[in-house]
Image (cartoon, rainbow, N blue to C red; front, side, top):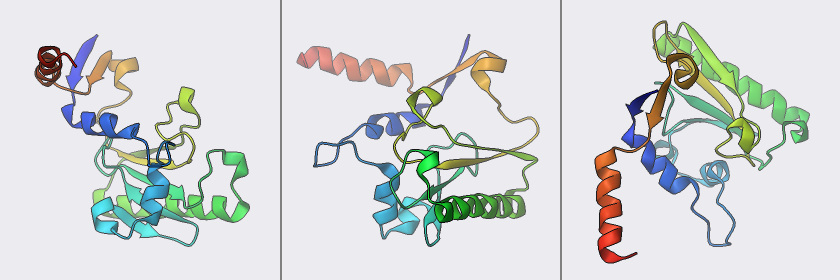
Length: 167
């Protein structure tokens, strides 16, 4: 299997599991929803029941996410009004991307539950990923290529420093 180096993903990996002061894992989408720094947090649009945010660690250029404000991880527990607005936000995202970036297609979907690949499993969100002919696609399955999230030299240096300091 080939390897693809993507060291910029390490920032996400290191911060994804940090806990909030209550001892519970913090929820990215609840934090973003409560934020007043839309530009800093890459929030593109706020609706009545949900919002659209750019993925800070995208799978592709223009990778957006739509999420309800309410902390809910089960699609079946969305209120009808939340579900309607969520998919209106997905449609709006596709329109904006089509106008600005002119993709040839989209991957649109949700990863519900940890085994389905959810990075934030308790606050559902919909990924909207624009795609172009010839761009990357399902690399591990089709291209037999694995994404390595940190450069080996960086990992080595960090672990070396730990061993030298014994901790």
